[in-house]
Image (cartoon, rainbow, N blue to C red; front, side, top):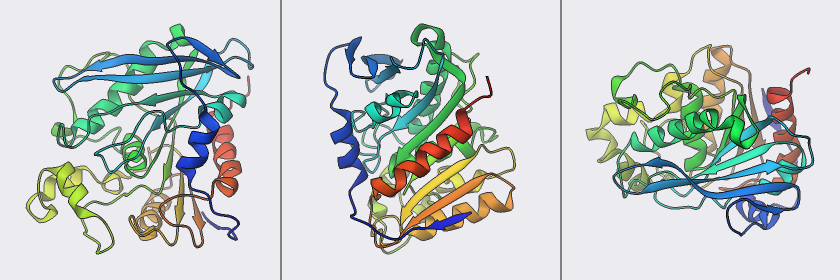
Length: 295
């Protein structure tokens, strides 16, 4: 399903989310509607130890709480796990886990996917400790983070051996997610577009798309779409100068053809950002529909 909305005052989502966050502190600090566990090491790699932040609701009972696993954007070369809407999400009962991952300047694809899968496994392995629900996890992200969230959604049962990490930590835990929110992230890295900064894609893949076709295929969420994929929500501006909205339109059609529950919220006149005022109710409705149980 595709939704079109009339433009209101456009605000960059990252700015809105950072303004809403207002969180800086030490581990196990409490601020407002959540308890924050900051800079928790979830994975040790050759390049560096990877950290995550856990925000647990304090006004919605003892849990276990459904989880939004947030993956920040930044072209796979930068960004910060603090770029997340922890406060408004915890206010409505969702725990938030915001993660670091290795940048393409540190390690080539599929290291980033391995890190995201490790984070999902970590959530399940530590669910009781942090009052998290291991069976209710939505992966969400913007731009490059949206791409990685989409990979978690569609490549969960992929058989390509090089996507699978040998002997991962918490190997007894699943890295499956129950839903995906992709905010203007690319879905197909196989076809260069004149508006897309393909030098970032080439840095991720370790070379030009033309010389790395297998890597480009393996890093394209659209290539793995099948009927077993979880529900998807995509939000994309039709004036995006970096990731053309055609990426989300094609991805949404592929999911629909496979019978996957999917929704694309198109935002007229919006660039590489979202109108947060209009997107927020759609995002929360998706979370409620995807993660709320009858219990």
